[in-house]
Length: 154
Image (cartoon, rainbow, N blue to C red):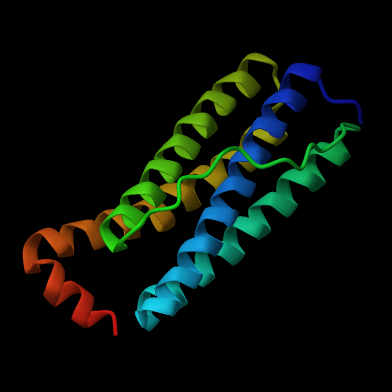
């Protein structure tokens, strides 16, 4: 099935975002592990795998639409400490969320409702899982203080 080029370009942009999120989570997971924050490491490692799965899904959809996947990640922002890593990951997820919303709008305009449905599922996961968890962590730091938060992550 031949997809519209504008939709394929959009899907490749989203793929670049998923690959960037994966790489950023990978770096942060290893940093958490090195710092001894096992809970943060485990969760971030899990998020990295989910981003990899999302990338695979984008590649499958691009191929189904007879497109060529461009597997080059967008730029990443590796943090230097726990708060900056969490904030950078949240910024990445919020960017992905906005790009997904824009893509959903585009798919509606182009009448590609199957891709739209696929993107809605991606958006749900981004909002309800990834971004929400990061917001919770930043709120916990605010409420309990960084030292107590970090102790809870050992």
